Length: 378
Ligand SMILES: Cc1cc2nc3c(=O)[nH]c(=O)nc-3n(C[C@H](O)[C@H](O)[C@H](O)COP(=O)(O)OP(=O)(O)OC[C@H]3O[C@@H](n4cnc5c(N)ncnc54)[C@H](O)[C@@H]3O)c2cc1C
Image (cartoon, rainbow, N blue to C red):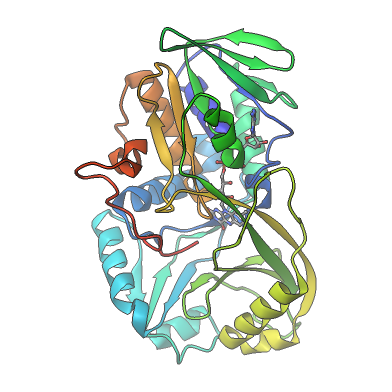
């Protein structure tokens, strides 16, 4: 998010943008993302952001410059009886927003996904234009273009504090000193909550650990594989290169107190569990071979929608965090929208009022997206 915002600010002509990075670019959740890029959301705001972003991923070199590694594979959503109505409503909402997606029958799905077991699906959704990208590569591509446009990027320079004078942002403090500024955007992923807690800003963010396993596909498996969100088996997967498949599982994940300290490798139990579930969808994957795996952090609000807002009472302070397990695919829109919020005072590309921080405070019209499962797909 930080790299996309910095690029978009500079592309709109804002001089003097400084991007501070605690470690190295992509070292947070982004570098551990499976980077699926699809548009299957159940709320209009995220569906529109995903669709806007998909166009950028697909035309990255023309629109931004550089390579984000987008690979079109198509994306399927498999839903059982219990999820059928909600999936139908989500697809209708997406189509209304102009998104290219539809519910397809099993025969069509069998052609798109040969060798898949489909008998347990009550509804199958297909997005032909979706796929995946290279997550850290995308961050670096944004950073590289941002630098060309005049942004300064300081690595291994965590912001340790903010100076707030008379209710206004006055400076950011790092170990190297103080940088005066009137505007700060906090896009610190899993670190956002602790960074702001010292100023009495309480963000309802939970940090959890999530695992991914990579399997080598058996030699007889079809050469191309679509990405998928499998609600029946509670997994998502996508191809990686010519011969691998990355598989992640749903579930709440283990809570992590310090984002710098968590296990980076998947457990044996996780690998076996997602392998079994993958083989239920693609039976030939029983003969796959485990290759490697990793784990990363989700930073989630109670409704798993991000917070993109200014902070009431502190002029010049903006928040862009809480993207849970689905933020990578939104990053191009996030950069453009946060830039509108900062430069124009309001977002015009997409109405982001559902993402205001105050939705978690008591009051009429707030907490209106309170179902933790509102967001269907990871
Ligand atoms: C296993 C896994 C799979 C995922 N799969 C997908 C997927 O398929 N599709 C999808 O769309 N999304 C996916 N996601 C979610 C996606 O990766 C995140 O939503 C997204 O990367 C969040 O980006 P961010 O910029 O908010 O956070 P981060 O990438 O964590 O970036 C925050 C940055 O801030 C830096 N930072 C922290 N504190 C400070 C400080 N004090 N000063 C300066 N810098 C600081 C950190 O070092 C970090 O680089 C997945 C996530 C995980 C963990």
